[in-house]
Length: 112
Figure: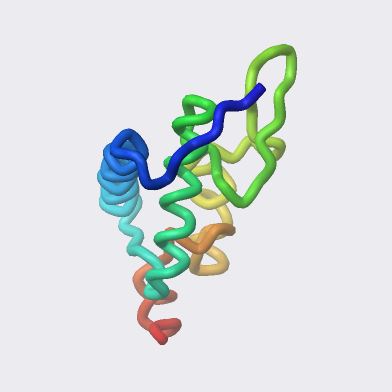
């Protein structure tokens, strides 16, 4: 049975900081930027943090995490930064499925 995560706990807030540093590194590595919509970023970062605490990996929060043979995995093999985002979504659509990571051009034209 899954444990619950207290999103206001010190443990969660410390892990959230680690997730933010992780996401900063992803942006730097791939030349991406964050979504200009801060609400999207906050929700996705919190979801990544929650999944890391519950399942031990930063599974994409927009896809189901399933248990198979006593191990957890993403239903669509989505561990951040996921292969579809790297190979297809950001290059072709300008943003990943969750919307956290964007190309600089996408971010400029979708600033609200």
